[in-house]
Length: 158
Image (cartoon, rainbow, N blue to C red; front, side):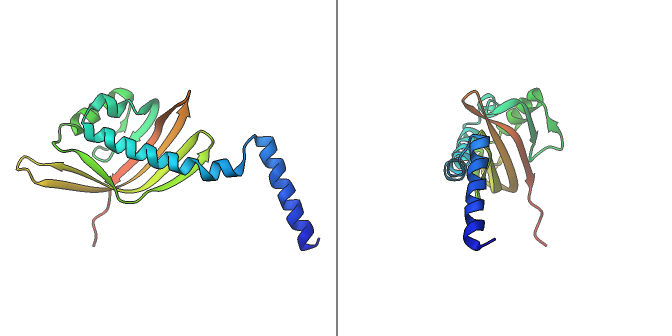
């Protein structure tokens, strides 16, 4: 098969796949990663409010949270309790150091990278906890909800 024929066949196959799945490659590639970045930034701003109900409200009821500062998988009730404890830290905030955004499906995006939690200790000193993270959001009935969130403290440098 000539190079021109292979290219034409490849283009036809891609067009057929897009038609059968009801999506276009351009919409999946061009628009969704920014959605993940915006959602991550919004999560960070909500964390800084220290309002545990608002923080937990960003998660779907069936979400899985493998949180930074506990070894337990969080149920909805335990998730709220975890955020209530975390929110007690004065000046709680997070800085996203790196963000890798991906589209997993038309209604599902992910954001992974490195972030640093910060808060003030009893003496007013800033405590920093560098961690790595992965979020997965799903658009459910027009509302983006966290369905998976893994966060773990980064290993010490040797």
